[in-house]
Image (cartoon, rainbow, N blue to C red; front, side, top):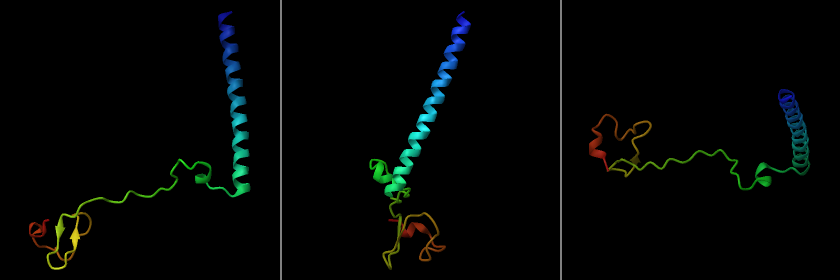
Length: 93
């Protein structure tokens, strides 16, 4: 008896989940149609979300300065020509 009740419960839960999934699919299609109809962007519908994928700008402080020109370098990336093979300590800020 208990086994049968458990099986019926599982079947009912599966049917409920199926019905919910079908309903949500319909709702999503309706929303997509409205968005297309009015030419909306995601940011129009959800303004609290930031949809841009901008990279965070580097906030590294310069570690080296060219005394002749005042140009600076953070120590990242390609070594500037004004440092070249010279001792970096003489350009340290």
